[in-house]
Image 1 (cartoon, one colour):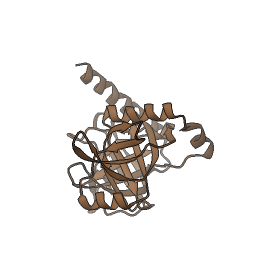
Image 2 (tube, rainbow, N blue to C red; image 1 turned 90 degrees about the vertical axis):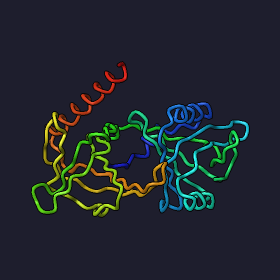
Image 3 (cartoon, one colour; image 1 turned 180 degrees about the horizontal axis):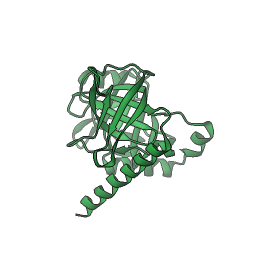
Length: 244
């Protein structure tokens, strides 16, 4: 999925007021949202959750990563990038001065509270996370000896995300034709995908995770509408379950 944005969009969606920044950070803490942390010029990353913040100490606290080696490398870094998706809105901000801290007797990680924060939503950036218990599938190279059925982690009208527990057999910017989205009741149809990024991180339980960001290439209007209806149906079903 494309992550490029115009300078005007970035400027318009950057929050620099302390009250606004703290509000967004507290919202991430309250929701216990999964946050991706990248550092060392993108060569390392891990998943975490934000735990708390201290206005007096000007520190943002986060859970330690799953790997001691990753934690040590993080503490040696000077800067890092945080990214999370909440209700289809991408939240991004920078962290500096990583350090160890104590919070309620527990050892945690901490960074300086950022002075600004990017809160960005585009039409094709609204990504809906899909159920993992009975996953929807993308079938690569359908009806060939190389056919590969992979679970769809999230979806938007711009593309899909795929999460794997083993190293994928793809390359960045690789174009893959003859891919079929299997959305079950919402239909099955062919798409062409472009692998835009491959990220390697660790889960909260110290398991390796590879995330593929795949962009639709020349998606038809009919299929775009089909995806929008599928996403709307999933959201309606979720609300009904929540209401209980």
